[in-house]
Image 1: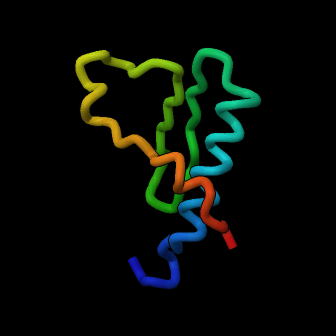
Image 2: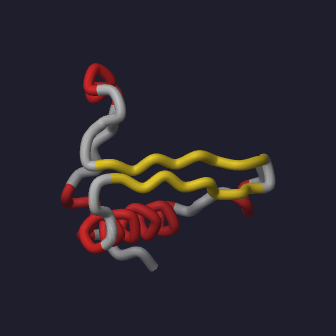
Amino acid sequence: MPDADRMSDADYRQLLSLLRKFSDSELDQWANLIIPSRYGDVYVSLSRKPLVAELEPTYNRVPETWFDQPTT
């Protein structure tokens, strides 16, 4: 993928900040989304608990301090 198409650090922080806002304000128990991309559909599952409890150690926790950084 060309560098111009890659997300910048600011883009990534903004994505996570918006996901956090969505999680705080809109997410009740779960949301399953299909996001079309140029490479095909992407399936996204958001929930208040891991889909499989045994897989919880495979998740990466976003540090609180990451949200204090500017997104622009």
